[in-house]
Length: 251
Image (tube, rainbow, N blue to C red):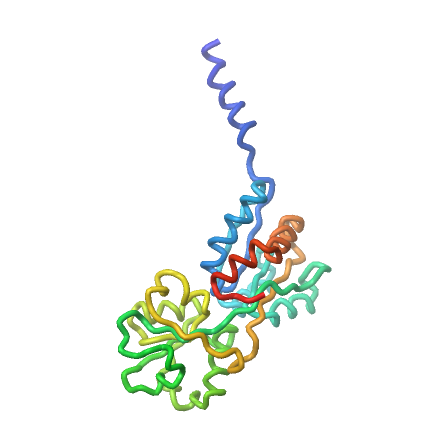
């Protein structure tokens, strides 16, 4: 009897704590990091049988990996172009791309800066600003938006020598923290989140750059399309919308 008791307890524990029924892997734009840190647990609270794993990067870099059939189920881009391209090349499920949020671009300065971010982009001309960080516009939508904003403000050429680029907007946000720049043009979602929230930011007028409409797509090779669709629908719901709004995203 005593020999069998531990085995019986192990069997009961195994029955009481089943393994997740589905693994959902998401390739997500770097600007979503802090929002997804909150969104994923909220989703799992509603779908406890699903285990979610997220990898972050520049949207263009993730798109290149997905063209090579990288093993992700869902792609959340910082724009709608890359998801649409995947759909056009037959790499998305039949329900195609979807829009889940619209982001905003912010000028961010570290705490203690002698400059005031509320003065807007013109402060980049200040000689005390030696370096300004932004995402690489070749494959990061927030980088492209930053360059468009500088162009619209007639500053692109005037501050070109000050610009330093991160591979993604997440990396660009790390440059001022590391002392490699005196400020950055980054996603509002990152400017509002720790540790950058300790600094100061100014939300750029949306008219200075093309809309940062963010879209996603479920990949054709998704291992569990039902789990991917459930996360997509969660992103469209009121709870996710409220969470995204706290990070500066509009619907």
